[in-house]
Image (tube, rainbow, N blue to C red; front, side, top):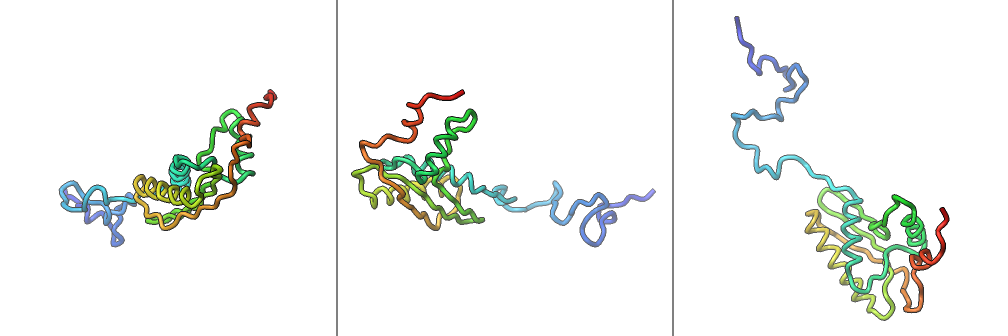
Length: 167
């Protein structure tokens, strides 16, 4: 009786009869392969970065809301629908590559605050949070201030709560 080795069972392409690529797989007796953290690839979805950035931007004093008036109106309606939930990504758009990301934010600021200071604080907070949590390099954070919340204005959310709900 003769024994066949793994080498005998594999063809010239490096795959065995089961179709597994043996050139990429090391056996338990083999050494090396690098640190465990470098084996494989991690991908981060745009939505993950958008959530992190949205939460970080909302934490800044002077930011009243995120998104344009239309987006906030649709968001208020969606928030009232059962299962709709609040959207932390409203007003945030991310473009995520393998090692870098770029963000566009649309914010509404409180009346009386310095828009330049709020934008600077938002930029710093978003960059810090995204880079710390994802390991991606944030190459730019573009901020568009779409509105100013005046002290005597009611929020769209407040207006929706005052109206009776139809069921």
